[in-house]
Image (cartoon, rainbow, N blue to C red):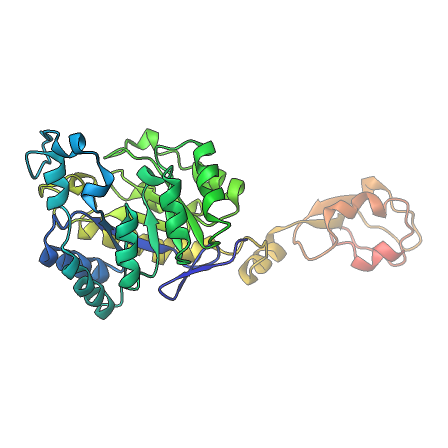
Length: 350
């Protein structure tokens, strides 16, 4: 079992409570006041952390991509560059949001899409960094973030296993605190494309904590991902799925997030256990009543050679286990054994 990774003082990994992240992303639509409302609501819902996104838009897109007309139904501006810039918070807002989150006892961090953004958040004292699926192959950025020696959560959508190998091999020599997130980068993602078994594949392949970042609608799959061992659950979060913007439609509203937190905290986390097989006190009582033992099918007098036809398997389960039936065959009874009673345990020594 990999050691826990601590984010904002909270342990993340197998054997620890699920780390639940409300991904507000760009659902603040560039409005710091809306971002505060999202943070406050996520904290009230019980999330451990709220995650936003930070980009230096001109540094991550070539001019033609910035100037390309953007006619998506979720567009906030005529060109893609203008659209992306409208979704960015001003730098002065970030410090205020960090403090606002701290006052509500919720961890605040972000996906960083470029080196300048990573450096900016480092100055703010970011407790961790998220690497988006889109940047998994951006090895120079991965190196830059890894050198900051803060925990890294990396999504693995739209990537091959070989590309994930390269990303992991880039980060781990520089930073051991890496959490992988199984992700399918469809917005929203159809249930038959989610492929939750990849959680186990990633855990076995890398020996690292693995979480799930879900873009499907509803809450069932996120809860199921926790039951399959996801150490982190991340869901996009909005106040209203009908709001304009690219991610609202595939996000949870407060009631949905509240239910995810409740089901994981109240039902799934307590049920996860530690993987060590043990018999509970109530099971011991039931076992004594319902399990089977070796019994005498007929009266067996003292001095008789015990034959198999003299024996039966019956309850209760307080005597010799049935596996010893053949061991008793051929032994000489040292006492009278009444019909339809349990063979005494000391018979194994006869």
